[in-house]
Image 1 (spheres, rainbow over the protein chains, first blue to last red):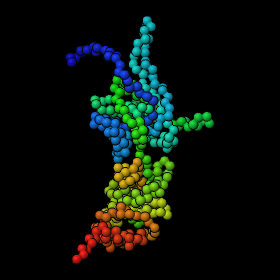
Image 2: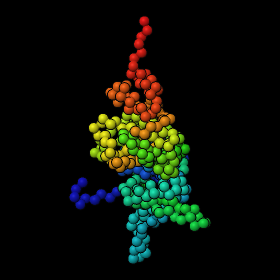
Image 3: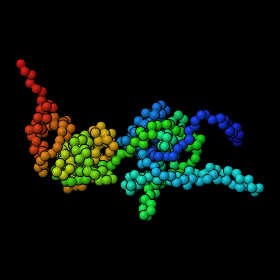
Image 4: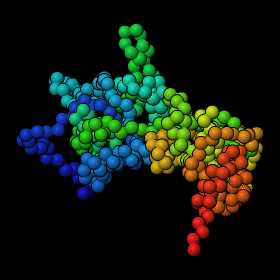
Length: 312
Length: 55
């Protein structure tokens, strides 16, 4: 095209309609996704493949590649900006631009703990996928793929007080440009139940009980409810493959054995004292193995939170 | 090392690569605080000691 050449587009499109047409239903769930997340043409070949891709992404070892399902949405407040118009001198209203979508999604599950987790996404460059009440996953179409809808704003609001007439209000706000789910909408029908069942990882916090020589004794508790996971996973956590002590230089320290300790509902992790990175006194870090390793070792849906064991 | 009794462990609780490297004696010595010498010895033998073929 030449400089200063402007080609006028022929506007409009055919308006005949099929027997049924997609209309987005109310949103029941959202997925916060990184910019890089994409459902490829292969992922979209069947609903089962799409669900598998979503499940795998929700459990991804790398947090930067992970998608984060939010809890069930129980209400929506639409604060979207109306179409912006200018009224010209003779009274003709002319559309200047579309308004921005600005929608608040309310949830109840997860309480303050989940609210605080979602607030960690505030001011980050996250995108979103919607799941509507008909099981349709909605994002934005890029070629033959579906990507997350880019957001101008993701804001998990401070919770609203229970005032005796209304429950505590947990919600997050999404603001985005309208083209992404209008002209550029990308959607695929899934099984609603299966899609709603895609859950994010839960944290496992490690609590140091004692350090004696090469033996570190720790408890494993869930991040939100502080439930000791011993009763559920004593046999599975007593597995050397699940534990990663490291020197502060990042070098792994060999674990020789892990035993479950019933009387304190903890785990005794023994380091190899001949390992060159082992020290009986220096500080070290301790974490669980990656989520995929934990899952393979019968502890699905969890991610460890690293602790620093202080020097003796 | 504090003596612990009643510890719960399985085959997965042992780093068998390390156990093979250090040998049975050091392996049992390293885990003597588990007070499960007989069971550990049995696990070690099952893992590494080939049964003698009968004539």
